[in-house]
Length: 211
Image (cartoon, rainbow, N blue to C red; front, side, top):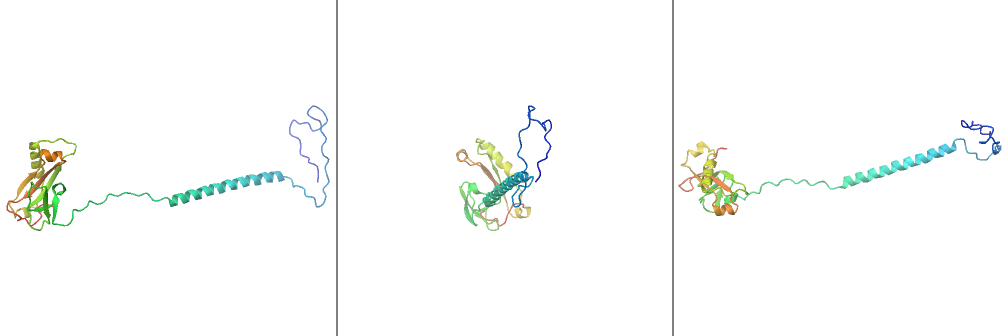
């Protein structure tokens, strides 16, 4: 093999030492013996590249493991439970005894007594004496407005009721307002109800409201 003939770096003496002294002796070139392993030129650079390549491969493998773990965690995480409002519970089949607080617009009642805490709700195509036409509810945080104001509110509520004229013409109909007393207001009653009634017993046999 030949001696390394690479030129010295700039500003470094070729023939003399740093202080003008003769350069330090160098190992003489050695002849190549057959069978001897001589590192090829540039072997150090290749080793550096292999080391860097190994580091890169290791980093990529680590990233792959992290991604795999994240995908597994996301894949096994339970789905969010979305709550949906449940449908309004029915009050049961007709006929049924219904509390006044559960009366709904359109309900028909047999043997209706406006002063009773309950009424017998029936199908509107069967004999009945009253039908709830409209409702106004005050807020729970409101103060008792007084009897006269409640009575006037009842008339106002009844003014919003729309009747089926063909059905209404078959009966002599009256309006009856039901509103809370001071005591029932203090117990949480905030309803003003407008009923369409007859004064001749259970003679209504159809739905009186305009759909």
